Length: 540
Ligand code: DQQ
Figure 1 (cartoon, rainbow, N blue to C red):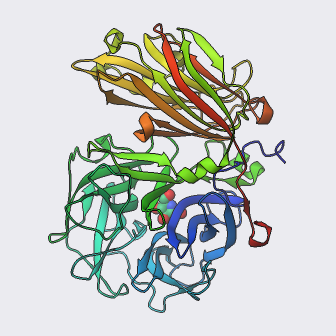
Figure 2 (figure 1 turned 60 degrees about the vertical axis):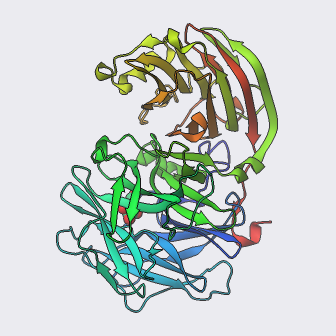
Figure 3 (figure 1 turned 90 degrees about the vertical axis):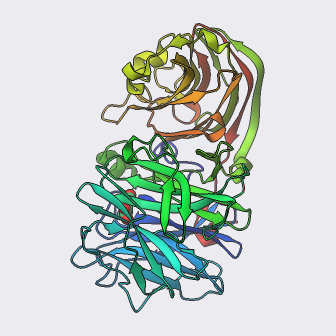
């Protein structure tokens, strides 16, 4: 099997076969984590009859695949059961709100509830007799009205939710109110509207504690100890933008702290292949967890040959940074259960132009954490940001070319001779009045195979002039590399399809192509065991 399926993951969530996209309605309910996802049961491509796949887990790592929770069956969802969310109503009653593509391909909102609440796996779901609950309002395109959020309850007892919408190139987050969860009234003003972004897909709206704790908070909490996050997947950008701001429930207004006007915003959850994310509050461990879809970068023909397409990120704990300005993300602690066979390097100097192999682990499935000690930042090369595009800075030429401080980082899923590798690296610059760091995940040399999308993902962020160290963690899993810079401040997910760096022929290196040396203050790497995915009977 591994020979034939070198890209199937060992510990990232996948259905047994076929196409998967958005995460839907994740929740923790009576001791069980439920995960639903957009799934085409018939082919490894997006299809006309999308269903809600359903899997359950006790630890968010090992999964039991169940029958589909909802599938097209009625005139209001016959052309597809699209994305949506779950809200747990008082009395511990989960309810799904999802988008149906109806017999005219108009997008409408529908409800479904578990048939039997005493079945811990909630295997069967029943559609509500009053469906469709909402049809597209005027001023919104009939096929641009979808992806309801988890609802939150105001102090007046009414429920609120956001639905993504579009009108031409304008994206909108429409707000609705309800007393009984069945009859919903539109609020006159949208919660947010943006120009030139296309559809406001998969909105998410949730509170985060201001106090710098990593703890999460229930979606309905509104008080002075929280700020709110509004997240959108802008269709024209295929990226996850978010705003941190204040929510004023009396006026139903959300005011972002720094509203720089939609797509110019720099707050992006992940700069790589990560889309349509959705979060939930995990009561079991008091944390907010975020899932995102990582799509393939190979061709449809490759997907047909593989028989599957689409992965989910490792669930990430998400919280507000102590600065109050941005979110931090970190793989949930449970993934560490899969760590095996630790290799450590401490206090090793990496002179300019040097490369060091991290040997002794299965480099095709690994978890690597490294802390680099930086040289004096004063020596960094000067950059005039107005003239330099981070795109170009991260190009192939720059990944291997010598700078002053950096590029340094990891070569993951590399062949022994390094002709194939994905470089995840930092490079530090002195900009007018500040220091900035470029972080890239460059997969231009990730495979000798042709016809793959092999680009690079990058971002530039400010760093403290007194900063002494910089950290990087990579979760490597055969065709995916999730990278977390600066302890989760910057995230970049790449999909790669090596032809040589497969299974035992995959290697991991740490490199420095800067003229100044950097020190590996500490590096820990682990082989990752395979997570269990299976039908109920086959799971221990
Ligand atoms: N995918 C879903 C839509 C959503 C889009 C359909 C985002 O509901 O807007 O599978 O990837």
